[in-house]
Image (cartoon, rainbow, N blue to C red; front, side, top):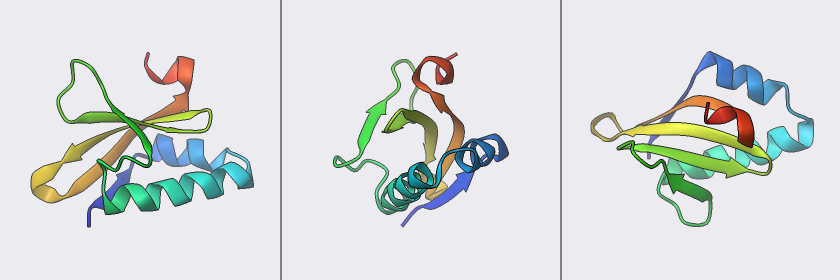
Amino acid sequence: MYKLRIRKQVAKFIDSRSPKQRKKIAEALLELEKDPYRNNLDIAALKGSSGKYRLRIGTCRFLYMIIQDQLLIYLYKAGARGDVYK
């Protein structure tokens, strides 16, 4: 099982969501910890970036990277679709 490390800005973004959204995000992040390549989550590899991925949960996008040798998932950016890729 992977460890999940969340950047402080991402944690603030999650805290700013509604309780219903926070619950969906928490459930998805638990699934992500089990397997970051899981097909039942909406995950896509970022083009031009090795080891970086996008997770879509409703209208929110989370960018993360996988550090394989440490079994670590690092969520480094979160936001709405138009804002997260800038």
